[in-house]
Figure 1 (cartoon, rainbow, N blue to C red):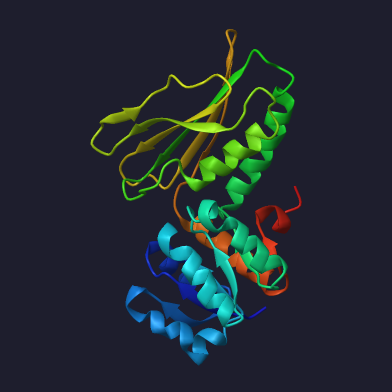
Figure 2 (cartoon, rainbow, N blue to C red):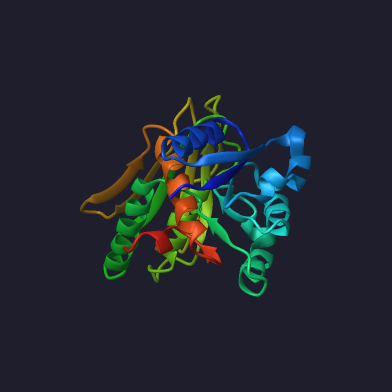
Length: 253
C-alpha cells in the first residue's frame, strides 16, 4: 500500500518517521517546518493521503486546521492541545467529516502496556488495600509534565478504580536535580511524579502498594523508533478510515 505522506514537523521524530515511511514504500510529498508554513498551500501538501504531525502543543491545533482545510487526514502525536481544543476537534471529526488519528504515544509496546494497565486497574478495584501511584521519566528536552502518555494511563486507571477521583501532579525532579511539588497529595487522587534526566526516551511505571507487598508494571522505551513505526502504521490505517481515531481502533485488545 503505497501512500503519499506529508510531514508536519521535522525534528528527530519527523526524520525517523521519514526513514521508516520510505523503507515501507511510501512517498514523502511535503515537509513543513516553522520556516515554510506557506507550503500548506502547495499542491504537494494537498496531494498527501495523510499528514503526520509531531510539533509543539501550541502549534498542533493550528496545524490540524490547515490540513483539514486542504482535505488532508492527520495523524498526530502532539500533546497538550486537548484541554483547550478537544471539543472543537471532536466536532470537526464528527459533523464536518474530517479525520484525525491522535495518540499520546504510538509505540506498539505502549499500546500493549495500556491494555495491561486497564485490565490490572479493573482487577485492583476489588482490592482496596492497594494504593496506586505513577512515575514517568523522560529526557531533559521534554518540557511538559506529566507526559501525555502518563495522563492517558492515569485516566484509564481512574475510570476503573472507584477509590480514585482523577489524577494530580506530585513531585517534579528537574534536570539539575532540584525537586518541586509534593508527594503529600489527596487520598482520592492518583499521584503522578515526573523526572527529567539525560536522554531517556520514556519510562512509565505504575505501582500498587499495600502493607504486604508492591506490584509494579513498567514500560521502558529503548529508543524513539517504536514511536515512529507506530505513527507510520497509524497513517496506513488512517488512509482507509475516517473520524476521530486512536490506538484502540487499530489494535483489537
